[in-house]
Amino acid sequence: MPSQRGHPAAAALMRDFCVIGGGIVGLATARALLARHPGASLVLLEKEDGLGRHQTGHNSGVIHSGIYYAPGSLKARLCREGAARTKAFCREHGIPFEDRGKLIVATRADEIPRLDALHARAGENGISAELIDAAEIRAREPAITGLKAIWVPEAAIVDYKRVLAALADEITAKGAEIRYATAPSAIRETDSHVEVTTGAETLKARRLIACAGLQSDRVARMAGLPIRHRIVPFRGEYWRLRPERSGVAQAMIYPVPEPGLPFLGVHLTPMIDGSMTVGPNAMLGLAREGYPKFSMNARDMLDMAGFPGFWRSLAKNIRPGLDEIGNSLFKRRYLAACQRYCPSLTLADMQPMEPGIRAQAVGPDGSMVQDFLIEGTARMLHVLNAPSPAATSALPIGEMIAERLPA
Image 1: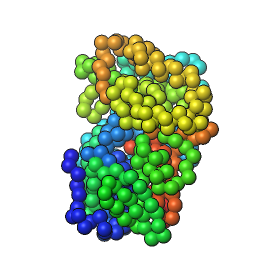
Image 2: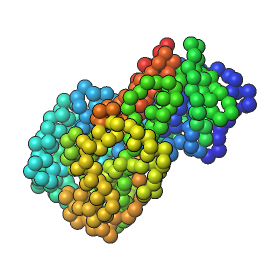
Image 3: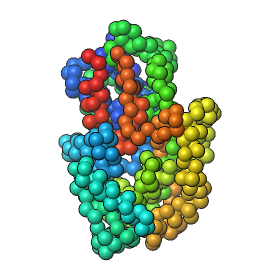
Image 4: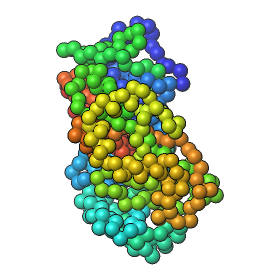
């Protein structure tokens, strides 16, 4: 997609808002700002040649219900609201989505107490969820086996690229300018505005909002924020089932999540195009934006190696980390994780597909930041951690940012 650039004199203009990042959170934030400030001028900067080239364009397409998240957390509140808002937005714009529902399946006795606790959490979060036994699992999904499960009817699937395109149409119709292939090289805040240097020009805006995803910590440091965390990339590797097996389940099928980890485990997900994916795992990445297997980036690796929190996190999670390495290297091990709840799957069913990369904020103590993290100054707000379910929650996240932005 070609870069959308204005008149050469446009660089000298003072915009009301500059948004950095063309993923779904950046677009939703731009939409919320223009709704809150009708007639405002806004420029959105995206370093790639199109929108949603990273996390938004590589997610599993799930509209999450919010069952997993701690009651009272931003994740829980924003996901619950975001699911309803996303479905309403899709109806308004003619974007198809399907309420397939989700089964969270316990396949071992030691998982049942965690499953029961998750069901109790659903009640605290106001989410419709039903405990069902092994016979009911088979009745709903004949190919799925388990001891006990939670049925969550509100979970749905959608193509977030279409949501993103509709958001872009909305904001450009209101006068927003989207600049592609435009990355900040310097950010300077003054008493009256923020200056963003991009290549040979400098843009000025009264307010700046950064939704930079995998590069969010670097953009924040560029802007002078004294952040202590770092972004650590995790590769989510998927397989696509061969077309003849795409109907193996009608609902999304999830394992019971492991305690202490922010990842939900390898699951079966029907896609809105009729295909079925298996995944993702959660493999430590050696490149923030390197999608081919074994991608490495020297800058990203040095960033991690020089950050004590990375090594502390590695030490805390050595066992699940080794499991993920095994699943990544050996297709049969990956298959075995799926066969726990879907025993009929075979190696021949699994076809390769492009992975996604998740931006995970890690604190200096090695802890993985579980909730949304937003920090700012007098004229800036930076979204520093927007983990799953950020796509589901994007519309209310955008409105929360617009409300928080200093007047």
